[in-house]
Image (cartoon, rainbow, N blue to C red; front, side, top):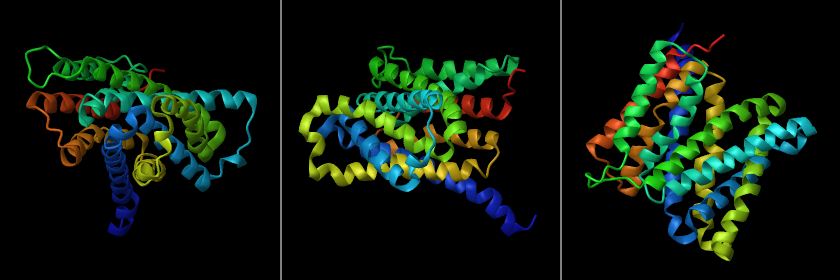
Length: 287
């Protein structure tokens, strides 16, 4: 294979996916700067609402042919998306970004391992449990994590697993319109919650530029880039590369939010990354 062809078929999609993951975590860092103004729920409401507007303008989802049956999976997908984002942002109030993403990753990891029963899969389960155990607040560490924040991240991981399940069904029925339609449903779920929490502060013009930046960095841009990478990379390669996201999140938290992690927390994140990458690379669905 010529070098130029290999570069375009392999290297470019990998670089695109890395840019997408960096964009998502940079957006999360930027979103955290809005918490003092509109809180976590208000920030989630702004992100999803603005992202829905942007995605609808680009993807024109009104062209999709909706039926009562297809709408069920679409609504479930959107509710999972909204719950995932809201719970994740609520967790960021009290725990560092990298740790929140690592804990959230346990949802897709559990979903992947549920389809297999090999001995090797229990190695990945043990690694993930070990990582979570290292993060548990023992009272002896100066950097003990907030239990509620950890629980919210794990709950976001459950929503992420549901997002994958219902997203596959909705995607098969609505194709490229799924992301825009699902984001609209998520916005309809979360916006009233954010509005009830912060009121008219949600419409303050001075925070609009940051909110638009969060919507673009965390939703519109990475979703589009991930779709490019997903269509050009094998599913297993895509999943293994996605396992880098907790590390990228931890670095984003360090660079943009000055969130310094302890050695044990870095080991915990590494264990969860290794568990996710290992499961993605070796998983064999049960027949």
